[in-house]
Length: 176
Image (cartoon, rainbow, N blue to C red; front, side, top):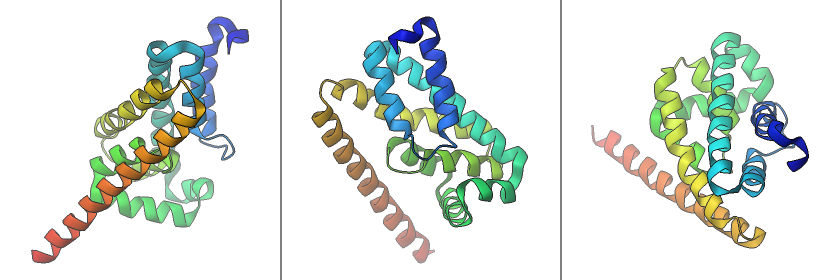
């Protein structure tokens, strides 16, 4: 990133937006690059701006392109699953998806737009969910091994907590 000078952060933001359309580049990789290249504070700020920008673009595309076009981008099966997930859990679905680097951040942005979820509610949940992940990456950046292990355990823990919540919620709904 040093070779890009002042353009480096802008290139990272653009890369995060472009990454939504390139399956081969995981967003978590761009987050790690940002932290390693710019340190925990500035790298974290660049990630926040990048995620905000990419999520806003995905949301806008979902809103303007509509369901059929988005299905062409992310697939019908993914769109249906994410729509059901968002319809059932809304704000919390976005937080958990952003917190877990192994869930589809891109699909949730597109579908949030398709479902016309309130933009500020969507972006608020996005920033709340992504912040702990950014802090986690910034803390664990020292070694690839600790980062990989930490991300795996953090992802599993967030997924387990969410699954427990889903189980509780389904049980609660059956009682009513």
